[in-house]
Length: 423
Ligand SMILES: Cc1cc2nc3c(=O)[nH]c(=O)nc-3n(C[C@H](O)[C@H](O)[C@H](O)COP(=O)(O)OP(=O)(O)OC[C@H]3O[C@@H](n4cnc5c(N)ncnc54)[C@H](O)[C@@H]3O)c2cc1C
Image 1 (cartoon, protein in one colour):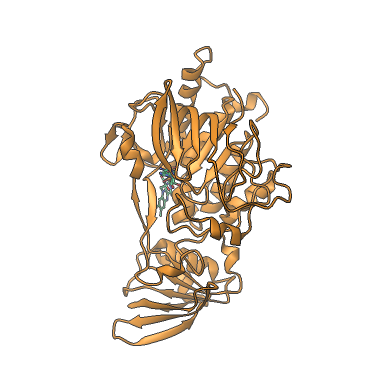
Image 2 (cartoon, helix red, strand yellow):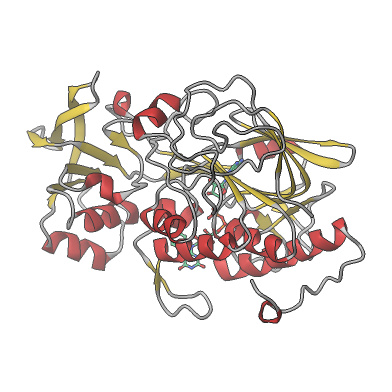
């Protein structure tokens, strides 16, 4: 079973894994990647409107891990490539590529990342796609700074470190990451699944493992200032270091808003937290830390205007208005609207896979109603379902082991122990 193969395309691409790649070249190496500016210009066709791209980072070992810890985009897999060394990237994509792989994993949340490890452990080449510009699913999008305490052998671990560990673990087998693009359609050709992504990339897989969690998350929009999206307004923090020395306004009253105010408090020049209600919904201990820190907190207050030079993307101030109608102007370089996400299965609903409410129905092996399509993690439903990460890890290991045997009946279901060999 081989590494993913590029079978068509080869144009230089923005925000993708191909930088001057040729036929049959391994497709997934981000190298230095495009600059932030280049990425900004690339957001467009096929990408959700709300993306705020950051510098991607990739390369081997520690750089991938560091990128994941920082929440930065990881494009491609672990080895750097002569294809990308010092490469510049063009801004158009004449021909979307077609990739071939043993396993396509849809969703780079905790379940999908562990699935990528397991598929590699079973000798299967793997492509992982996610609509978000970062790996980590709900953990990175909603609670990267929280301590996770209920995963075996990890008494307490910060969300972003947990995800970085998963990325590092999967990296042992060099999976190909296609981040920032949605899986929009699935058909079968000659009995094998073919998935098309929002940027036109086609992935032909021998099997698909759906680990799409609660679906495609769409941020709740800030009522004003949408025109600043992609420059001075973002819906979540991909890379906290971008805000070093900035005046940052965080909007929201839940865990994400509190987490970001707390985390940025030590690196930003100033943090202003704005919530339209009197009471916060987020964790009391985090709120206490925020209130005791340098953050200025405005409750019963809304953002009514973002002002600055829109053409250059340079924000100068944000106008707030209290419930009493009083206006307050605060200096601001960046606004983070942490107002939560609305998640929806989106295109998966149209794929003809049997659903169980808002979830995908699976059997005990993780098989869905579609041939060669499996599912695991929060996405799935079965009579014994418990939606926890530790459960998702078991489910995806089960599903991938069945994938291995379904693809090659000579194999045994039991994979052997990881301690038996180098991995
Ligand atoms: C605040 C909070 C705290 C939590 N704390 C804990 C805890 O302490 N312990 C615990 O076990 N669980 C906890 N959870 C739940 C835990 O985060 C989930 O169980 C876990 O994230 C599920 O992982 P997953 O990979 O199955 O799905 P997700 O994390 O939802 O990842 C799914 C990924 O699929 C992507 N996706 C969806 N559709 C598509 C598509 N069509 N194309 C491409 N990509 C797609 C999404 O963008 C997402 O990145 C918590 C949840 C929240 C909100």
